[in-house]
Length: 261
Ligand SMILES: C[S@@+](CC[C@H](N)C(=O)[O-])C[C@H]1O[C@@H](n2cnc3c(N)ncnc32)[C@H](O)[C@@H]1O
Image (cartoon, rainbow, N blue to C red; front, side, top):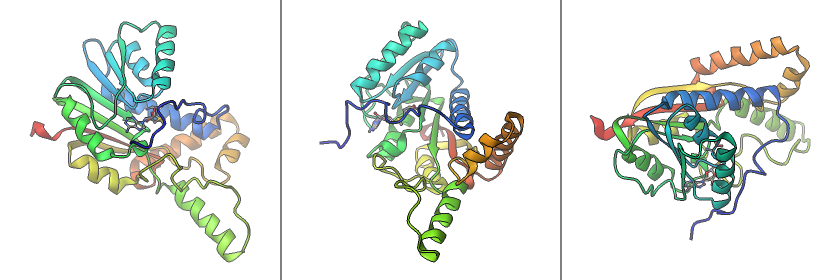
């Protein structure tokens, strides 16, 4: 039996209020993923582990024929309601399935995206292989994943080690941002995602997005700054992430199925 909760919804995931760095990161990650998939009229796109379907719907809004593939019935139920609200029931469809057993023919899609989800899979590399299989030889697979060796993870770990090991103080918080949460199977960083993706995809782009998200004191500092200065900071750090993906908050990989060579 698989260790996942099929009745899971996003109530524990969607934050009720967001700091400036969170807002910037989530928006940046979404836009970079969607833009890389080139959703548009006449294109068939697949959103693997589509959750409540916001990205599937966004691709349908851009004119694509979009399918959300998701194992959770509750998430699919919510996605259908959101699609109705956005009036894209015709161009968005929902299929209940696992990422490592996609019920689609080889080469059926022009693009396949998987955003913020691979670390939840029990067999993530099998899922990448499946995404490569169902994408056409000229198509693209876009993987967006959190980097657990980002600058903020490294700084957070160093601060905690200093407080606890050198000063002998108690931990500041129960869950440390640099430890993978309990519902994650894999703790991704650049080498691991590159290695797994390269076995199934010819990499066309490998970029880092945003830097500093979750770093101790960072959200408070940005909140204290005037909005224009805070925006300049997050944009500046985003430029650093592009230059040094190893320290970025999120990695976006774009590749073509390997069978196309
Ligand atoms: C954090 S959510 C991400 C949802 C969406 N992609 C987004 O960006 O909001 C992770 C999703 O992975 C799904 N999931 C977990 N294990 C899976 C698996 N083995 N195959 C496919 N989806 C899975 C969960 O049901 C959940 O919807």
